[in-house]
Image 1: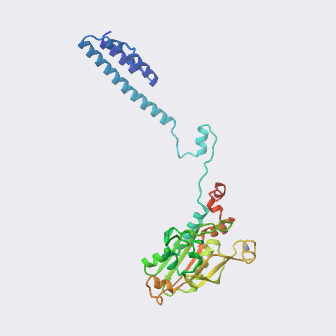
Image 2: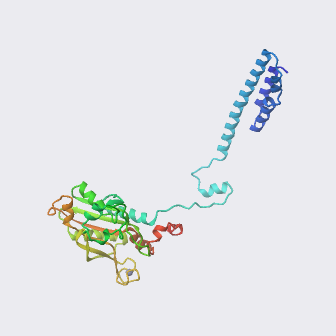
Image 3: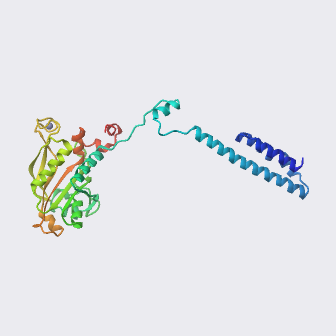
Length: 342
Ligand SMILES: [Zn+2]
């Protein structure tokens, strides 16, 4: 068989192949180890017929390659058009068209702490406050000294706080962010910082070594306790409903003078008395007070010129009350059965 006839026959077979399997069959028949072409090439004796056979081999190889490309592309096109899904169709219709049962996909949800954090941010942004991020690792200078903690204060003990180095600590409150802000900006300051804080607590129903706080600071000319109380009343009503009332009990905090613990009228019983409020009608909500003039001196301001107030509360405690979550541990256990309820 001469080279040209062999080539013509092979090219015709390649052209006729309609599937990858048929093409493969033609390739084996005309280019395989036992094909006429390969046997003829092995027996070749003169240069001229060798060149002719090689030219035929190259032509057939090229034809097979091109045909393979075309068949693969056609196969892909066919698969894409048959498997196309109209993503605007309701999932129910797609499932029915594909003959499979509809299994609704579970949607994720925000962690309760995140939900409350966002609500708190919204409330304060609405009041014109700036939301400021702080550092979770702080120097003792900002975490204790600047906030007026005396050297003997028990919070400074490594038994109460988590130290990273001799004078660095995992922040025990978000207040250091306020000092950084005061160093960077002159009044008026209206800010809230929200984030994780760390205490060396033993884990039980109400204690956990990590929790979230939100702390606010307002410094301006002429701010009084009435502004503090009005602000907290507004925030408590935004968080717990328009019927809420706020009262103050005197307390002591290192960086406020005077210091007050705010109570909110119990949102569960409306003040009549229930188990949550221990039948007092009031719930303790955290700490607050007028900024101690010491802080103004720390950042180099005139304490006669400015006044301000500060307050801090727990995010988890807020979520517990708003969502009826018992204890603090569920917030950190990442148990999906718990988290899916919100
Ligand atoms: Zn109550």
